[in-house]
Image (tube, rainbow, N blue to C red; front, side):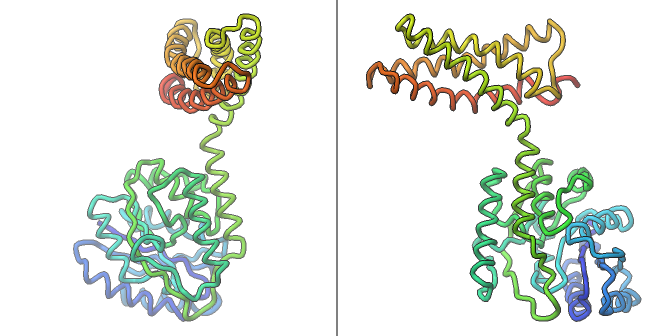
Length: 375
C-alpha cells in the first residue's frame, strides 16, 4: 500500500529534520509498504521549508506543500489529504504533528492495524497503556478528559475513548475518498472530531492503540486558544445536524401529545374507563402525527400518492399501535396495583409516551420514511 504521512508545520525548523530522519528509519522496518511524507507548511519564517527541501533532495519520498498562509490545523490537514490522494496516490493517510509529541515508532503500529483490516486507527491517550504528560496543568487534563466524555455521550460513540487524538491512520478507498471536506465544520483543532464522526457514519472499522503523548521539548506550541470552545461547538453542531429530523419529530410528537393527553383526560372523566380512553385518544393522535410527520419531520422523504399513503399508513398504524397497547396495559396495571388516581394514571401515561417516542422514531425513520423512500 501507498502510505502518506501528512505533517502540518509552522516554524518547526528545530523539529522537522530530526522527525523526518526518525520516520525514515521506521519505514525500513516495514518494507512491504511504500511510505511517503508530505509536509504542509504554513509559510514558516524560521527556515522550516529549507530543512524539508534539503532532505527532499536526498529522499524522493519526502514532499513539501506550501499552504501559503496559516489557516488552522484542520485546513492544513485537509489540504494535505487532498494533495496526497490526488498527487501521491495515497491509499492510507497518517496524521501526525511535527513536535515529537506523537511517537515516530507508532506509525508502524498504526499501519499494522490497517493491515489487520481496520479502516480508522487512533493513537489513543485514554486507553490502557496510553498516557498524557504528568506535567500538564490540572485544567488541561480536566478539559482533555472532560471533552472526550462529552463527545462520547453527545455523539453516542461509546467505543472510542480519544476523540481529539492527532495521531491516526485512515483508509482512503471507500472512506476518506467519500468525505466532502467542504462540509467539515472546523478549520482548527476540532476538525478531528468531525472527521472521526464522518468515518463512523461511513461504516469504518475503528481500532484504538495506546500511545504515550509526550511534552514538546523544543519550538513553540501551536495550541489554539479556542480549542475547547471549538470542540464543544463542533460536537453540538454534529449532533443537531444529524438529528434534525428527530427534533422535528419530537415537535410533532409534542403536538400529538397535546391531542392525546387532552382527549385521554376528557374521555376518562366522561366514561371513567382509563384504559379505553387511552386507546381512543392514542388512535386519534396517530392520524395527526402521521400527517405532520410526512409533511414536516420527514419532509425530505415525503410520501406522495394515495396508494403509497394507504400502504404506509397501514404500516404506520401497525407499528404505532404497539406502544399504544403497551401504554394502555401499563396504565391498567399501574391503576390495579397503586389505585385509580389522576397522579398514578398520568405517571403511567408519560412512561408509555417515552417508550413510544424511541420506538416510533426508530421505526418511522428506518422503515416508513427510510432515506431511499423515493429513490
